Image (cartoon, rainbow, N blue to C red; front, side, top):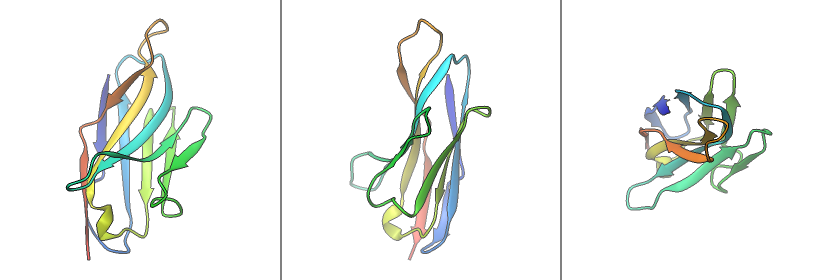
Length: 120
């Protein structure tokens, strides 16, 4: 199983950026898909998550600005980020909870991270 994230880059404050993360490999079922971030001098934190029932949750600072979506047919999770601020600067990681086979345990997998830089 591999997760490949796309879409990081440099954006001005107030701008928008979209991230995507594609899951590849042998997969039986995907339960939840998440975006985390690690800001300089901070621990990695959960930004947003979406379950297989399309239930979403957001960290308070992301509510109303970020939107997480999943496309199971494409095995992809997206994070649309609007009204970006310098404090959103971080490396963003996708994370997926899935079963590789019917008998496998639920396991978390991480993507490689993509840098988002928001200039003031």
